[in-house]
Image (cartoon, rainbow, N blue to C red; front, side):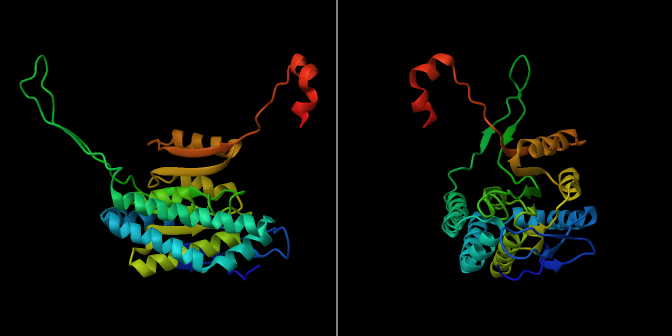
Length: 285
């Protein structure tokens, strides 16, 4: 497991804090990580909002280069990610290597997607002032970034569905700054990926506030993030219970925001008596 400093990344600056939590890796000794709070969330989100207009105004080519740079920086940390991810989660090294490839592949896929521009949909229905019985106003539809996005790391996918996973990649591709709440099951892995994103920001000249990463092992950080008035969307992969709680918070806001969730569950199976009698052994296999 690689030595980690256990700090938050807030708009380009690594910061600690008085409160900490102890990680519980699958192998090796646990380590102390700074634990976020509502004040830290507020600073990260305000930094994201401060750079939103500038980041949204970047070209598709510039954002694509940023995503490619993140992928390159992650690959440059391949050994550290595999070693730390294996120690923290117990996942086999081959699985983590494959998941790293999936993560960088997603980033490069979004980069190619926005470069091509095929997704853009602009529509204009001109005004019809003489239309009867009522005139039609001038109608225009364009796709625009929505604002800062909150992303929650997943416990079972420390790379492809966490710090630089699909939710983060898609938000950055669209021109939305991201604040990630790292999962406490793999804080060191999340920190290494955050370092890669920070390096890509510096490499491509993106504004520092475009990405922040906050550690936390309590519900306080997640609640503060989802309910912050400057957060405009939430991405989450995890349990049904956790996702439903965040969805309810999104819906209960004075200005409700979209919740993009992939929620896990246990699917019931029903075996009917006739099927068991006819092919019970086959079903059991």
